[in-house]
Image 1 (cartoon, rainbow, N blue to C red):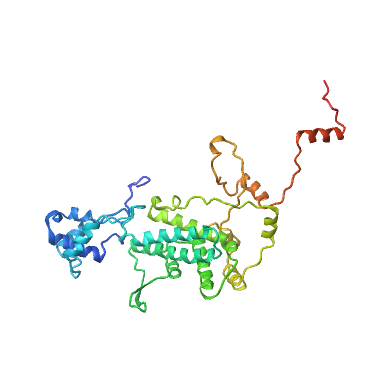
Image 2 (cartoon, one colour):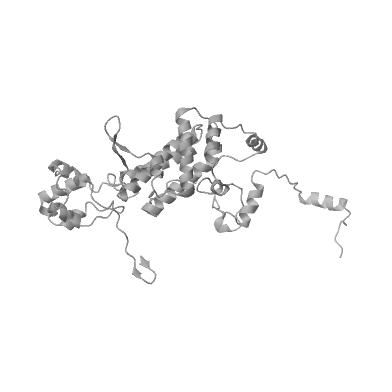
Length: 354
């Protein structure tokens, strides 16, 4: 990376690029065992991964007890167990199953949420997606805070079982350094409010009403995942286009227009949240985004097998498409003989002049 006119730009090292306590214990066991573990660089190789690089200086500090003196060495059995499964990675992503557990869980939770929402026959889709997506976002932000060296625990607080208590998603979003901003943050704030309604009261008929927000939620997640951790972890390849069995006929369009309203408490929650939003914030695609599907005939042979064509928002083509979505258009169609009859009835000659 270079800075224009100033030569190479120094990349700030992340505070989270350090060894965890369980790793320090293993390093101490390796140092004690010796043999192939006499070189600090060789030991370091077991603890460096794409999402976290560690300087070999840390190994030297452990060896000389300049740091981490209070941490006990792992047992011989623990070291053997670690070595027998190393490299313990998720084969789909190359992530460390233990070291990158939060990131792996975040991806899997969002994949599960989208797949559940797209499943045929379910009538509880929006609620299931919201709950699962909030878990996914929580894990993703915890992974980000951890990498940046930010402690995301409530100090001095524990669960009823005595476990450490970590920040919930709403608290994560309030942090000044949180990477989720603007429309994406408002989108999550909205879904958190709806999640509260889901938890405490029964809901129904909310899938269609919330679809635009759910779509933005999924896209925002994938964007942040790729931006902060790498494009190789994006979910596009895991979540291909869902084939549709639906074509809208006249009766279906009429049914859509007469669709029943939202439950009162959900409608009230939406109104309360969106009351303070500006028109610009409401139109922000990071807050909500919707798509229109129009049957198309490919103009080029190479595009004939492409099921989805993305049209740029604001373009002339997008404007034309927006005019015809769910709009009743019934045009008369005339075979050649009917065209001739119409022309003759209008007074045109049977044969064109010579």
